[in-house]
Image 1 (cartoon, rainbow over the protein chains, first blue to last red):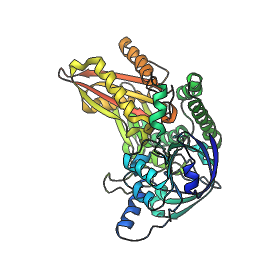
Image 2 (image 1 turned 180 degrees about the horizontal axis):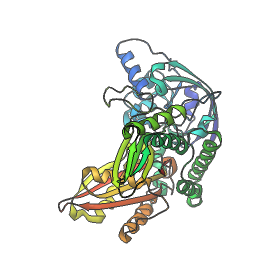
Image 3 (image 1 turned 180 degrees about the vertical axis):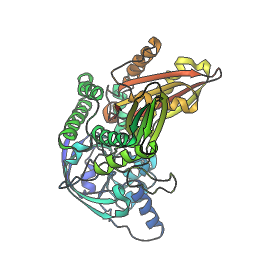
Image 4 (image 1 turned 90 degrees about the vertical axis):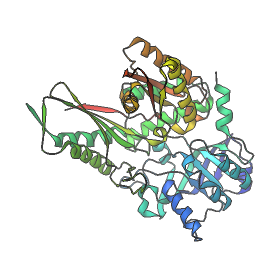
Length: 182
Length: 280
């Protein structure tokens, strides 16, 4: 099913999503990948607050290429989500509602998605030029020293993503492959 | 003896890095453009369509095909009758990569130390494989390697008794484990024989071979065809969301090995299998 959603999402929105749904996201989302997650984790360990309030927000696991002059952003496709598995449950428990990436997640992450009524979306890996066209604004909001790994606030319009793991515990990576196995 | 200024190496690599990150080689374009014809899954077809559109946008608007513009792997085949002048070859190669990545708006994805992890901010150093060959030319092959798929690559030290069936099982296991993480449809480079490091380099080199070609050794060619069919029967499909097209090509290279061993290197690459060569 094709669905249009505006961010920030609510638990009502995510409860209606089912693995396999094709979703067009519009609104504000934030990027963070390996180094930003490691730094956020250290910050939380020290009892300090994060530079982004993740409550009801979506993280896009992305490190873009630099923008050419006059452009908003460079190539902007998803990176492998599993490298953030160590950190994702903690952020989900703090209110993070959705993640956009690619690839398999651990049981701990999938359990945290169910527990918190969240969602894990896949964007098509290696389609960074195409996906960049949906990004209308981008600004670094934290960790500028990390370069491509800085946290960026993105304004997106109809960003195409697919629901892989929903709040009911369905996992498209497991079910879809079975269908075409010979 | 023919003299070649290393500045020509720098200049060539700068251009090659920018070009290959925006437009794939003709073999990869042809494979991707035809990939949706055999796809049975509607979602798979839609994803392959997106990948085709993505390639067109990348080329027309000079936006890198993928944001992971890779770690630069360079194969430098140096003719024994060429005299390199004007500086150190290693510095010249790295300078070409630096210029290409900085001036070409490509991503800087290299950290100076694997544990301390501070970005070098210019995507250097490259990983360089030198070989001395006959003639007075220098052939450079650049393969910027993305790490979503690099991370799913494997080396297996099989027993000789496991033979070709063991090799097939190893490749299928690696592809199954990679699943959606390696950004299918993938290209699989396989190196059989040699030693621990040799099979890995062979696998990397196999990825730089024309993906429409087959190995000249008849049994190896058959193995490539059989492995592609078996991989495409796994059901992983485009983006790992189910379907027929899991791999676009399987390239296998072989080398003599030890009486006690059967090393197998499996280097997985996403559909953005970038390889470009130039002779100077």
